Length: 199
Image 1 (cartoon, rainbow, N blue to C red):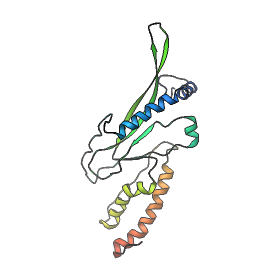
Image 2 (image 1 turned 60 degrees about the vertical axis):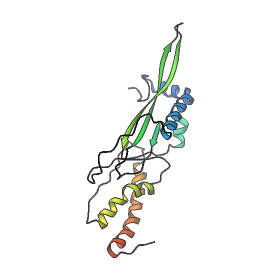
Image 3 (image 1 turned 120 degrees about the vertical axis):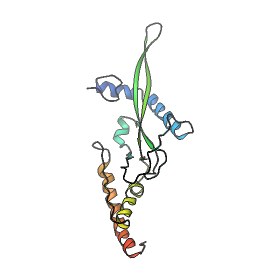
Image 4 (image 1 turned 135 degrees about the vertical axis):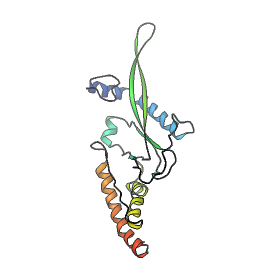
């Protein structure tokens, strides 16, 4: 089977070599997308979210940083179009996946020339956290409001799920959330039950 970013090539070794051969051109395309996202002119408007119903599941995406061995072998094709407002009703956030492509072009002399280009696809969510955001920030924006509601809001129930492929950072994120949760519970129970703020 072909690599998902192969652009039609079946041999994954050849695909990797082709990606590396054109690395500068591909990374320039990705840099252009990121510049466009940070500017006033966007490739696509972010869709509005459907209401603020408290019972609606929220989708939050987190991008982990690449490991050194990964950056040596390949380049970053994920762009986090950040927004951390999980509970609001504003525009959604987006996770952009860029697919490096290689086409073939024939000129009038029938000489084959490779054409490097990329395709970028957005996946929308309620919030997106990039690789610079800490687990504590993620917890404060996503889980802490659920904990506060459960402790002080009459015993509401909530579920937090981490989903992703092997190596995507689920264990790292979950472990950090559990540590933050321990701190919240230790201070939150006293604050809610006795009205005392711990510092």
